[in-house]
Length: 210
Image (cartoon, rainbow, N blue to C red; front, side, top):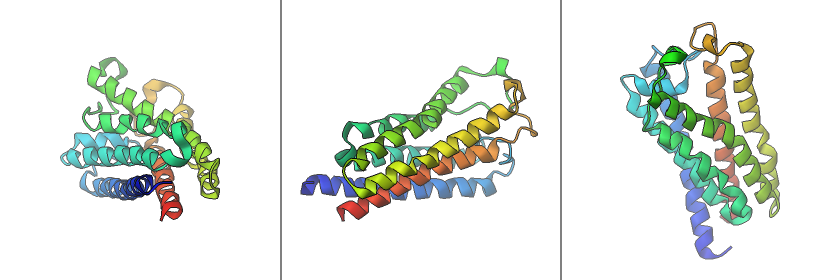
């Protein structure tokens, strides 16, 4: 690794660690600032609709750019296998500028804006575990730390399975948006699992390059 790539990887790793940490703190704060969005059944995206919605938008941007930065940090060991990370990061970054519809909105009344937000969310939710697995495998080919990262891809897959399982458990799509359909906490665990992998990637990168 040249001095330049060493420096770029380290900077990207530091940024990814800081960005995801602040993103998580923003969401924690929103649980207090916007209690009207019951975390047991309301989605994270809905915080952007409240009085302090700008904080959720900042969280989206920080989380998304943190994911993208992890792809930059892993470029040297993983190469093209890391490119999926900045691609899926477009999901939360875009979602920061396109608000969701409330989860209580009937399916027949979902707006075009809401559909775009849902599409961006799906890109990230469904794509991140794949991107993390590919980047981890790429890194594993070059270092023991990369092998740890590859195995750690189980974490985002677990988050995805929990969220999808909670969603499909209730059967009918029209049931989503009711208090008895408790997908809020699985949604939060899903995002935390993804960002935990990003933080691990940043930490392992710094161990390798510093």
